[in-house]
Length: 612
Ligand code: NDP
Image (cartoon, rainbow, N blue to C red; front, side, top):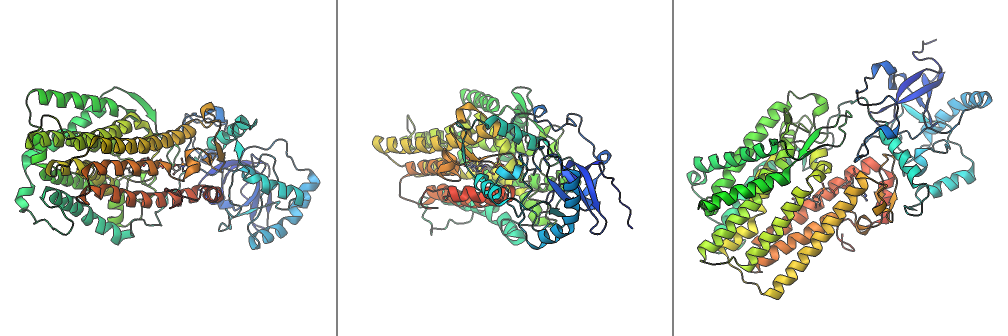
């Protein structure tokens, strides 16, 4: 007779099936034949687990700040974006009688067989069972033979009622149990992962190794092509520009100015001004701290530029050496990516990015191997996301405006240039003002820091996003006031959708019980987070992308219709966001399972209503 490691009644940590998360459970019995322990979770859910999925409590080290209790009230009430699955919350007074227990034991082998043959299985009818209202797919454990959900037979009427209730949408205003639900949800979130089992990235994105290799070549080539095209008198698509001499692309002085810019922004980032906030919990439960001072950095930069202009510094220099600046930024981002990859080889496995740990050099180099590379408290990815590139974009636009005035001998900039500058200025200021929101984006939470983000942040954003302003310097376009007014209205509509959709979701994530959101309905999910199905997020599944695309169009329209080049941004941006939306859908499907499918049924369009 094989010896068992854990005794009946012992409180241990049981792995939640299909995840790397362990929760406190009590051993209720052991099946000598199947070598399975029956364990009971705090919500009363009973599962049969293998011995390898059970650990003693002493083998888990809790963080100091983490209470041994799973009380929700002890947790931060900020954004709860734990990706953890939860076994649910404790059931009230559901103790099985001795006879039930015997019956259960007798039925167990049969149940195990049935369950493994006839999945999906239903959870036992526990009053507070998470899965009753979380939209969790009943087939969650389909591929996990280490666990079988017991007590699946329900009274038919109760079962029907539960299935009907499962996805019923509650108006949060009307729902008297709102607070209760959320305190339950916080309980799920509170039960946090205490152990991280590192996993390799299996699903490769961006066309895998070949795709990422091509992108490493294609992205810099595209920037070069666009800038050369923009310099031409006739920037028609088929009018290919002659390739410049290599030595004309590089100037050490320009590179020096770029370095100065980068390190000036780094100094601003390090200034002890602005609040410090915690990011979302990492897979090991830890939260990193971030200083929110991007807006201050912007003000300080504006002051520095003001001083330069006061002392007659020619910002026009930026326009004259635009290509060289782009090449300098590209060289720097390549060097940074190499550094990031080399240092990531020494990073502990748990600090690697979920999406960039494939083991393939090119792929990991491109997508980013390490999730949050830091030098001391200096977070390289977070810094690059919003500072040198984004603020640099505004400075470049300003340089283009001044160049236009100088070259065309204007006393005031053209209306087109004013519109492009103002719209994009608003966009950047908005991003810096809402800097904290970047902490919940895919870039920060999922993607590592590698060539993709380094090149994107330092080269693509400042030098491609400023294409309209660059175009207008060489290709003056006159628009009338009514046209300008119509474009402004379009931009305002886009901005309104973009901002209110992002705020609605951010506020909901931060405080789901916010009275201002009381009229919104949502589908609860197993992770404890809801999916909004009314308001902007009930209109399309990515309303913020819709707003962003409308704005992108408004930025291109002031350039007229003579050439397609200034429309590159909006065309590229639609492709980017359609691809990004597909990536996000994929992640959400993995996170929320059936609840996500229900959401998709309820909100059928992804970005464009009635189109896509
Ligand atoms: P989003 O802000 O769109 O966030 C997507 C996440 O929102 C999902 O992963 C999910 O995360 C949550 N979510 C999805 N549906 C719902 C719902 N119904 N209810 C509540 N939460 C939901 O992602 P991005 O990081 O891609 O975009 C952020 C902003 O940045 C956007 O406005 C975008 O347009 C902009 N952007 C701009 C770019 C540029 O170059 N200018 C490039 C990329 C983005 P969870 O459930 O885990 O919270």
